[in-house]
Length: 139
Length: 235
Image (cartoon, rainbow over all chains, first blue to last red; front, side, top):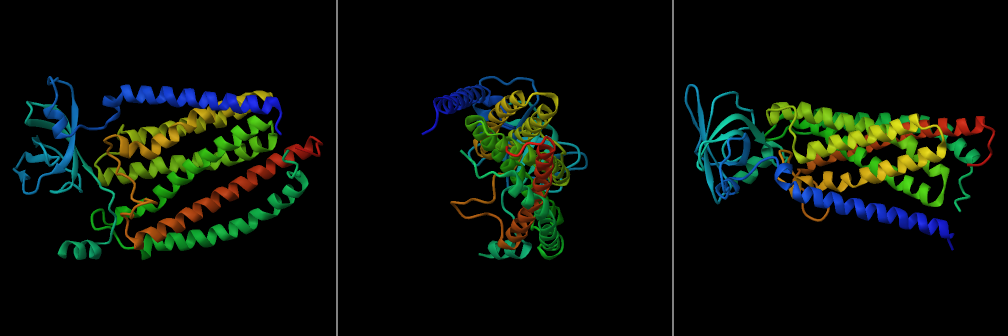
């Protein structure tokens, strides 16, 4: 019902799309390491060698792990399998608190100690009014 | 094929509809803004910063939706050699571009007090920036190429390149670790946004969609006037 030209143009578009999707997929697959914004404590544990580059570690702030002294904040980032100790001095974002997501940027001292130069709070996908949160908390 | 596009009939609609759409837009926007800024509750965690979301999320949705529409229209226009599809796509694109900028700017304003940074090179934010670049390329190519044939081909190619980015934007937060939070609204599973916040969000989305429709009708009307001035009676 459609002309030969129309069918050819359709095929042409399909071919371009398939080729592009495949190549983008392959590129992203091989760049995976650079696409992720942060690594989890477990991924840090599995690193074959520690490099001196600036990296980001992300996870949850472990409950009751925050210690604030006059010029330093210490806390533990956990992904509930592995943990990493973080020391940091500087401004803390408002949403930084225990049991919530955090991303720390800085340098690894060793596999267990991380010296952060910047802290970002990671917000989760839950949005609710305070009353609802209280009701949920009381359950 | 597609003989039902009669410029004169369409022109009658596009020249009269904008004022009604504008009226509707103002009503829905005022309801949406009252809901979003005053009536809806503050968030348990971010308190009033959550109100930025009522602009940020609809703007991002609309810009993604418009880019997808522009792509499908261009591909259709290319396959069936129909100029009208390209003109519809051309008229849709500017509001998508503007909403993309709004999404990025409001995201930055929200990011500073909540995350602690204006900008992060994470997968979601970077892929949104790439979408903006594709929008820019699309809009510029309409201006720099003289012959229509060339414009149609180039813009179709740009949208095909850009459309691959759209699912990447959508799923970036699931595929990789990102600073950006994952989606709160899921069609298949329960949404993690409370209903008192979901309704203002949907009303604001409707308002922005109406705004896009308004800009589209006005732009498309201009395109039709250009055709009329050339003395052509068909598309």
